Image 1 (cartoon, helix red, strand yellow):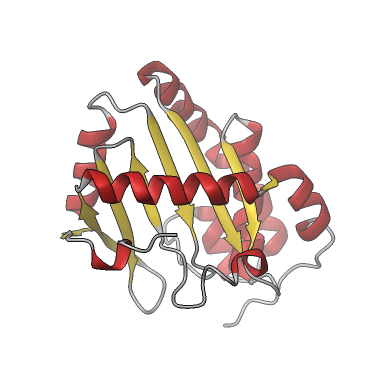
Image 2: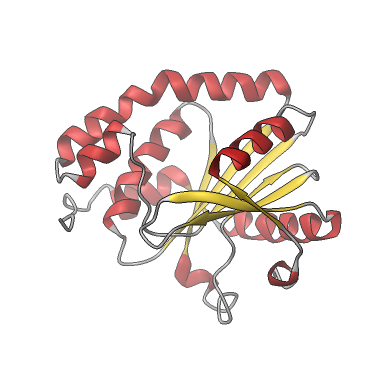
Length: 203
């Protein structure tokens, strides 16, 4: 699975170029957006809920998630208007990192608004990841595949863009397989995330 990914030819895009290219392709008539999220620690500066989380203000961080409701609702209305099916698979390692614990509360709001998100326990794909982790990718139909890039501190810095249709098909097939293996979001959240105490965030 994802055997050809590491050998694929890509174009490196900085963050503004990635966002511009993503928007162009997203509005070009594609019918699907699949996101495979593998990293366990990211930084989302400018997102009020994340800023509160990073400051150790857990209750405030959770209350601020709600500020995204209208933004996410508009995103899903646009996807529906364009006829795009959006799906996300979130891989989770154990013990759950503070970031992922916080993020799943954000994703819970997205699911409530209609997002199609499943969660996959990383221990279930240890055989697949013997050589390397599954890739952190966004797949826009059969038109473009982005490997999302982050710096050593967890800040988004752009993406590698792949256009080879065979590679996109292979990566999509891998996503499909893992998505089917994933747990229903609410079942996973209620079992693994809801019982956790507030996370201790390193200063």
